[in-house]
Image (cartoon, rainbow, N blue to C red; front, side, top):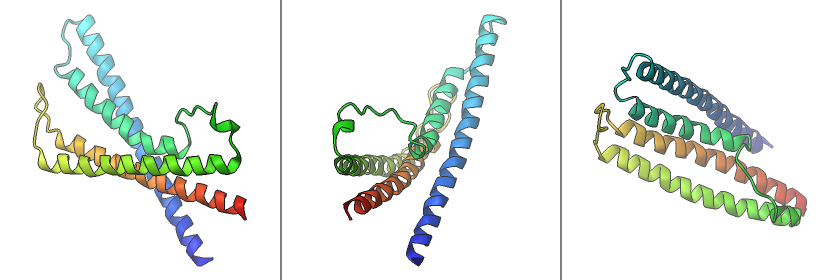
Length: 167
């Protein structure tokens, strides 16, 4: 089927982008660790902390978490409690997965939309370092958009499994 090969290429492209973004997220984690370590040493050893280190850490932690979220979903690294769902039939599990995926798609779509609206409209700055907040707010929208793409991939895979199982 020619249409399925195109869909498979799109899915692989989305997953490749999410892997790359997870790598960028790792860079922010390394920077976060370096800033925190230098701030602690500067404060405790030299009695001279880095001004705004806490503020920078908060931003970098947000960037790290948001950029890694889509990849975590891709590799199914999120915590799942299956005490009840494991007792359901396979079809019921697929249907429940489809419903929760649609719910997640709805929530992350709103997050992407509002992140973009707030990021474009508001021009606030941080308290201490006076860093503009709009790049981080737009980053919320971008990260939520990539989670939406990953949720769409997940929805398509689960739907196909359900159709194959029902046939």
